[in-house]
Length: 125
Image (cartoon, rainbow, N blue to C red; front, side, top):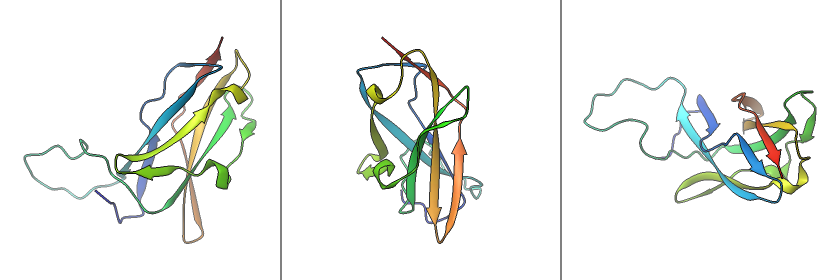
């Protein structure tokens, strides 16, 4: 379902605690309304994949130093297909043994909102 509201919450759905240094993973980005209107129905509200036409990007921070490792750019734009929003990430560009976290950004009409889910992950092997 496409959400027209601009008051959204975006998050990574399937983030793990650790990733292999030579791994490439598809990370799914969830989108939901921040303050949904009450609606009574027989269906759960958050079971389906929501999408938005607004631009979304990801960035990578070192979780300990808060230093930007990969900044927001056209190369970190989040994709969308019939299953929802996602991005493929190659973890070989990150150092082993360090903690990192993803930051997401939503852009529309000159407004930029950043989302930090505070979930850190480590690069192993």
